[in-house]
Structure formats: C-alpha cells, structure tokens
Length: 181
Image (cartoon, rainbow, N blue to C red; front, side, top):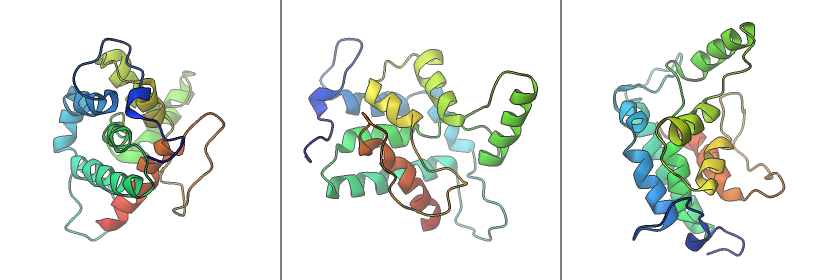
C-alpha cells in the first residue's frame, strides 16, 4: 500500500472486531442497511438525457465503487475503505437527486433549520438512525465525498489538512460512473 494510506489495522471500530477487517466490515454493514436496500427501486435521475441504459441508483453506486476501487488499487490505496465510502456515499439522497436536494434545502432554510445536505443525511442514517458502528474513516469519507452536480470537471482536489485522499475517490469517480452510462 502507498505510504500514508490508511491501513486495515488503522480503522478504529468503536466496538470489538470480528474476523473481517474494519473497513470490510463497514462495507458489509452498509449493504445490509434498510437505506441501502431502498436503493434498489430508486432510479438515478438525469434530466434531458436520451439513454435507455440509465437505470437504478444501486447500479450507479456499484459503478462508482468499482471505478473508485480500480483507481485506488493502481494508486495503492486501501480498497476496502474506498468500497465502504462508495457504497454509503448516496444513502442520504432524497428523491429527484440533486434537484430535490436543492429544493428541500431551500425549504429547510425558509424554516430556519439550515441547509439540507445528502452527505450529512447519509451519516445521520448510518450512525444515528441505523446505528451501524462504522469506523470514523468511513464516516469521514462519506461526509466529505466530492462529486456534486455543480462541479464542471473531473480533477483531484487537494484534501484539507488531516484528511487523506482515499475519501475523495468515490466522489471523483461518481462522475465517471455517470459518464460511463
């Protein structure tokens, strides 16, 4: 693995471990959540696109995971961590994708409760509502994934001090997953 990449033993579980690595356990826990199961019937929303191959959100999440893991492998980053972040990166999305998120955010601001962000909602689902006991590294990667609809190009962005680039891969390759379809 690349120097500085989070190692399997670097994951900090808040409860005793099982036989899996901490990040592999996190990926397994994410795919068994109720929120992940609800991906199955949700379509990935694209406006003004004529493409019969655009399918469901679960396919998008799997493509993001595959692309991010492939690139992470070539960079010698932690693939289990990348997979867990990729699988959980869209858990908090509401219907109608980023458009729905911006509408809900405007309503929340009108009511004085602040902006709505799907990444924060993802953490709320996984950590508070479904109590999945995920590692702090996975929660941080989901919270800080970068790949939103207002980005206009695919390029790496320097990580803030104290954060590792592994958490950026699912967001960068979310765009590649969109382009692939």
